Image 1 (cartoon, rainbow over the protein chains, first blue to last red):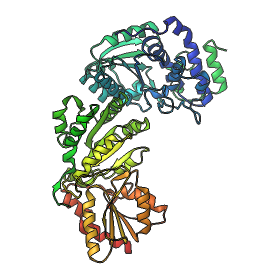
Image 2: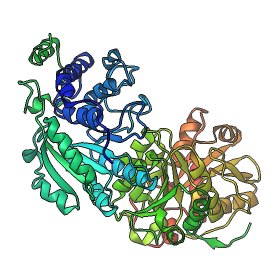
Image 3: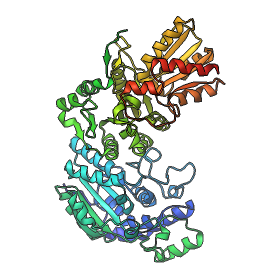
Image 4: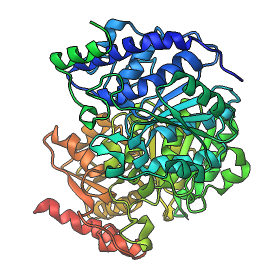
Length: 273
Length: 310
């Protein structure tokens, strides 16, 4: 089954600076958050949730999105806002007392969140369980799970990778936001995960390397992944902090606040005054 | 009351099959210990609803959480060391997300005797009960275990059901109910000594109470049944009216049943004598020997009561 396309890729291209602006503004208002990983994953989330899968409030058969790297919640919330689940003003309550927009996605606070996440390593297990359950339900919905580099350091991810291929979960698509930087530095220095493609293949998965900021490539990857008879991982090459030059590829921006001067400087780069 | 000895774990597969026959959404998850946890009955009757994970417990718990998201009723059955011990954050995340997965945790405390201190889980009740919204069930004999599994699976909350591995006497007559949050006053000869015990310790505690009664000291024994939520009304009344209160458990004296009762009793200004494993690891030996070594046989419990008068 080919999911129907919701918005055009041209629309996504026009929208991208606004989504990035909102992410930065949320973190600016909150005084904390994870700008680097939110900016690296936003194009993936936008493509899956706005241009490819079924995620809107009125979708007949809803797909699943599991944000394994739950700390990139600002990116996720901006997409939920695009889909009409919340107003723009509410975005700027992120991380504040009484807000439905918790630091990590919380389905009980914000029902538009499908899956509560936040602990690295647990996302793939939960997604695999959903995929198995939906197959037993004989529903054709797909389960998309987005992991970060840090998820690959958690042993549970590999337990789940084994189980997903053991149970032939062909309705499970994993996307790695492969920006190659974790909190403390470059992945190869923190804990080497290469050879990554070979690892996933050895675990019984199909793989494909794509550019995680190129909408056409992401769509092509999703098309192939959704037709796979094995669980599929798209290894999406991304840039941490993508869109703001001084944040790009710098682990400093993994987790930190954005005071007004930095916020102003960064949104100028997006072409937004 | 009979003295027929049966291991509470022996009912797990059978009871799950009984539930599974009515509840088509019930799924049983195993981490390669199904023979020890007595799942074979379910495995044979419902092979499509019996899911094997190998010794990968954290994934099994996360997977169970995913199954619950998709509308299924997952029950993960394994040794308590490998469920709440190995998968604490995974269980906590399921509770945080409000997903009522079920954990049947076997081989608690000294029940796993000869395997030694590495496997003797004397900290599981402490680990489980500190998680908000979770229910901690600790049935005493095989009949009550059956009722506890039925009640735990029916509950809308995440339940942790601690099930003994060693044979214990059947102390209930059927039909046995297991109302979550309600304790059972199982022995009552008067209010001087109040014993609150759980699981495999109930039988020994009743024996101690009988001895004290024959010596002229009236006693009550409470089978706590659920350590969380506590039956606060009944316990408050009993603790207030007793001269002495003691807890008896197959668990560390820190954080388990004794901890829970002490927290309640401290609000009433009443001291509690906690009898259980002192703050130390176990060692290899059979369960009966270990109970003796750690003062959890009838004589050991009786002797420790001296501390009430020091």
